[in-house]
Length: 281
Figure (tube, one colour):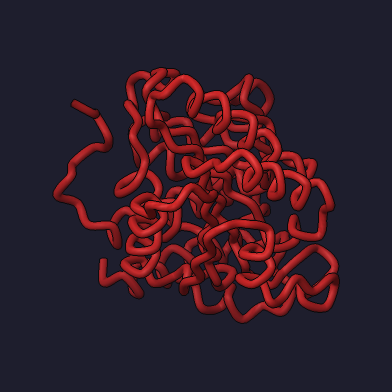
């Protein structure tokens, strides 16, 4: 019934590898960008598009789809890579990343890109939008889920917690927040900027069911998504994913400051080679 993905026999690990490779190729076009987030979050996006989401690649606006809202607009390069792998966007558009009139601007904009549900970037807005969508879809009774991808830095925004309270108040059991906890912000480690721990207890105190997993263990992530969808209680759900920035490219992982990476021209080939070797390609 659902045209969920291309090639269902392709494993999640291969999907995540391909997403990382697409992101590196886009990054090379500009020579810089939020590459570390794309590499770190690729496993979660592979689970989203090739395990959890109901969607039709050829019909991004299909009413029966699950919604995925990218609150963290600077992760757009990661989402584009996933949309390319899922067949929503053609691979040829990689070469247009960040260019004038491209459908792949450096920050996510819904008016430009098929499959991009909201314009994100001003952190703290995504969960509120997701709450409204989840409430509307629940009242329609279509059974769709709403996924909101947000970051650990975004948890410092008061509007995020106002939305969290609203979601619990309205018993939005069709809402799943997904937090990328990579402990990195533009100004330093998240725990030093504004510590949000103990994170599971905090979400639970706001009336949510909270799960926390290694976000780079793709099967643990898939299991957490399954558990979140299958819960019987009328609560919103959050999956907190601890990830490592630049996962899969060791010399980029080792950089102390990798929130926004500037990569030397000769390093792109080295990054792709390291990724290929790590995956056994």
